[in-house]
Every structure is written in structure tokens, then in C-alpha cells.
Image 1: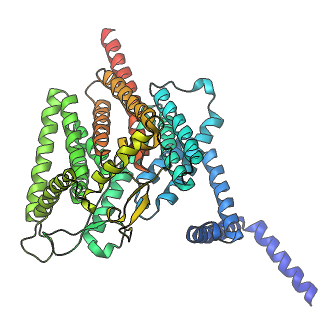
Image 2: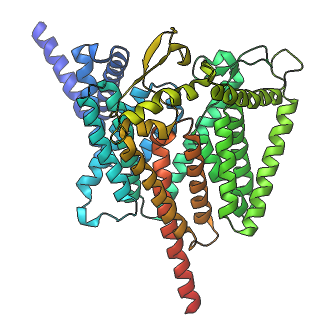
Image 3: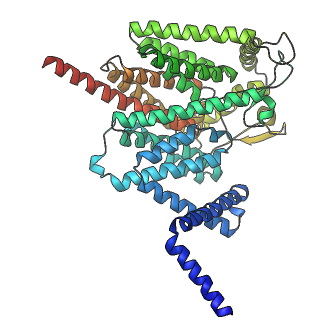
Length: 504
């Protein structure tokens, strides 16, 4: 009886394979997905200490995903990478996990470009030399940091951010060639930023029940902690939206721009970050200078309406159980607290509130100790534990993070690295400002002005947060720089075509 039974089982299996391939494929895919999910969860929690089977499963999954990325058009992995870097996933992933996924996606886009594009067909770009030289010097500085004994993890992290900035710029400059490509990248990128803004506002509404996904702040003007919606990408979106509104032609366009701007401004206001506020103010000033007179009036009107609305809403929004604690009082406390921080910092007070001044006092002399090449990427410095978040000690500790972009560049990469950084941005502004004058007053010009204004704001913000080389914001800044040149090129070409048609 055993032999016939075995025969019937085998026949049944063969019939299922022959007659119902759809179910079989679905079952195989479900099994592979389950194994991959278990492997990813195991490795994410245990790291390299996970079992060999979990590591093997993650490796095989990575190979399959890489094959899919190579099969797609290289622009698609680039768009996926930028959407990932601006998505709400950044709220739940650590910097190391985010950097790993980013490196995988950008690597897939780079490999796809290398396999499909001959070297001779690469598009020339005015920023390739400055960015390429800075990236090459970053590799040299990383090697120097390893040679001097800097911690490998810090060296790898610093080097990755420099390479990520350069790689995103190069990929956008090479893969985004037509107006359709520009619209694809902008549509998904800006929508991802807006989705993150909306998620953060929802977390703000939940308050302390939102968990530790967002930072919090408790001041004298309120009785409970206030969740802060800090999103640096929101400042870039704001600069773009404020420049798009004056050229909107229909009520529908103006409605959607206003809706997005309200969410964005609310996110920036509730960040309670004076750096983000000043960054947006500077972006508006730069936009007013660069735009034409007609557009300038409408832009200024939009900004005035937004500012008045924020003030009125903040004055009537009560925070906590105290009837006298309004959101406007929180804004005032943040502004006055910033002035007090500057006074205490200039007076030499050592406290958590003056840690940026302490960094300048401690790191500044060390820059002079090795002025030309710096101390290499990954270099750390000693600072009192009272000035470092979650240090759990007041004794001096080895710290890596430095708030000031220009100070950290001089400290780790020396005067040479700082000079290359400043040369890169000087060349960018000189070339893009020369090009934007030839763009007609249309969508392309508004986007270019928005990107330029946002980058100027980021350079000011980098005095207190090194966003230019800070993952994941560095990728968005590099993308904005590359897109501005592509928009300027397509805009000037369309203007020349219109002039030729009128002449004919």
C-alpha cells in the first residue's frame, strides 16, 4: 500500500506544477518573502552576530534586489533613493541603517549607469571638477584619518557623506536629461518630503503618545513637553513653494500650492528651531532679490499672508492646561532663549545651552595645530559630558559631532578642504546666476530661484548644523544643485526656440 500511496502523492504534485503554475509561483514568492523578512529582522536586531542563515538570506535578497535595480532604467533607482532619503522611514531608522540602504540604492543606480552609458556620451557639467576634486580629497582625508588612528566607524561615516553628496550630484546631472525626467524626480521627491511633513504633524498632534520618533522640548511658558517637528528638508520645500505660487495660473494650482505651503510652514514653525526660521527668512530675501518685479510683489504678498496667519494662529492656540500658555509665547521664549545663549556663550559660560560656543573654543585651537590637512576624517575632540546629549556624565568625553560645517571641515580636512568647499559653492553660484538670467519667467525660473534660495539658506543654517555634508540632507542639497543647472539649460533652450520662431 505504501508504494501506490507514494505514487499518488508524486502524481498529485506533478499535476499541480503542470496545471496550476500561478499558485505555485505565488507560493514560492510567499515563501521567499517570508524567509527574507525573517532574515532582515534577525540581522537588523543582531547585526553581524545573527545566524549564518539569516546573513545568507539577507545576502541573497540583496543580490535579487540588485539584479532588479540593474534591470530597471538607472533613473528609477535614483528616484527610489531620493524618495527613501526624504521619506518618513528616516524617523524610524538609525543613521547607519539609512546610510546602508542609501548606499545600496545609489550603488545600483551607479552600476546601471556604468553598464548602459559609454564614457563618451557623459554630459559635461560645470560642477564636475569642483565636486570631483572635493570628493577625491575626502578619500585622501579618510585615508589620512585611518593612518592617524581615528576610529574606523567615524572615518567611514564621514567619508560616506562626502561621497554620497558627490554621487547624487553626478547621477542627477547624468540621468535627468529631459523635462519629463525633471518632472518625474520633482514629483516624487517633493511628494515624499510633503508626506514626511504630514506624518510629523500627525505625531505632533499625538504629543508624548507618539513615542520617541520626534524630539521634545519643555519651556517655562508651558506645563508639559511639546513635540518638535524638526525636518530640514521642509525648508527646501518651502523655498520652492514660495517661488511657485506667484506663477500659478489657475485657482486649482494656487489652492494646492497653498495647501502644501500651510503644512510646510506649520512643520517649520512647530520645529521650534531658530535656525530653520532664519534659514527660511533668508531664502525669502534671496527669492525677492532674484525674482522680477511683478513676481516679487506676489511673492512678498504670499509671505506676508503666511507670516500673519502663523502669528494669529500661534496667539490663539493654547498649549497645555495653563490658559496663559499660547504657542506664540513658546515662540517668544525660544527667541529670547537664543539671545540669552549668545550672551552666555560670549561671556564664556559652560553649559548645555552654550555647547556650540564650547565647540568653537575647544576645536578652534586644534585647527591651528594642523591647519593645512586637518586631523583627518573621523577625528574626535574632548568636551565636557554636560554639553553632550545623553552622555550620562559630566567628565570629559571623546565627541565626534560638530555643529558648524565650516569649523568641522577645517578641523578634519584642513584649510585645503575648507577652501575646496568654498570654491565649489562660489563656482556654483557664479555659474547658476549667470545662467538663470536667460530663463523666461516660467516654471523653470521659479524652480531655479527656489533651489538657489534654499541652498543659500542651508549655507547659513550650516553654522549650527552641517547640513551640506550631513546624511540624509546632503543628498537633497546635491540634487537641488544639479537640477538647477538642468532646469536652466532647458529653460534657456526653450527661450531661444521661441525667439527663433518669432523671428521666422
